[in-house]
Image (cartoon, rainbow, N blue to C red; front, side):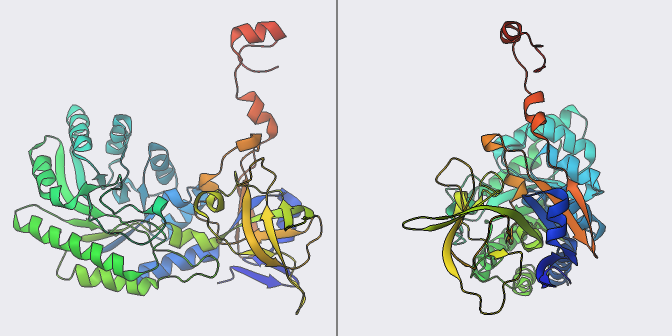
Length: 431
């Protein structure tokens, strides 16, 4: 695996020097090392070996078509949470029969779209959704395969905004109401009870919450099977974390062992939905230093990437490793700095208290482990175009999502007739 390494004085990705890419595509840009995507997928698949396992990549982590197709080529299915993600998964070559549709707010149009695609299952998260799906499926003369997502009331000890398995979270049906929900599903037309699903959160680096959730899920599955339900699939979700800065990561082998222990004796299919684990460390956000500002209280490194490009530090207080692209000489002195962007928000901070070498204007930095929830959560705040995305493999690279031009931000808007007439412009755009 090549990944991100210093070679000949500069950081490279899969044997492509990052300064070369920056000179040709401009900054900021996301850069994905395909070899790391391969490696993480194979590690995870090996960790859940010994079961009838299907690995469904969670597109919400990074829905770039090239990323999804990389996993599809390795045999991955897909976990989607919107009609848009379903379209991307299908376009990337994921068969409908290897797609699960999660999320608490599926629309009726999305349900019909997924039924037309022949997906493997809907992970249903409320009784109201179960009724809606029954109406849609019956109206189309279809049968919807359903796994009810239970909420096991387990606190995974992760960030409050990415916890999903506690009783007060919006996800899933309380485990003490699960049997009643299955009874409802069995009675409704257009519904086929196919499985059971659980997901307790994201960025989890302790195996204990997984053990507890898997155990409760397996116990419920045994209860349902004894009651005559044809539970042929158990979906254990995702949530496996990565190290980020100065952190620790759960060994996927321990995660897989917990799943095997809980489901011992279950002969059906076991679905996993990793996202962050597969993509985070495969990506870096490359930015250029605009200015170094020596303040009275702090030193600021101002770069051309911002919170609209990488929201996680502002939203979650996430700490991504930040390194210079030019390899520092051995023993180079380090000084503390905050790495900030140009957006007009005090929260536009990409890294606080970082020990960095002296960085000149125009120097390049890499914000590492940003392949998950980086580009996926980007916006155009401050009328900044979405960031460019690039993938490298084996000494070559390709732009996998071009940077939109500024003109696109203007051309897509429409003036109402009264404003267009007043300014002598067309109502269907600015001329």
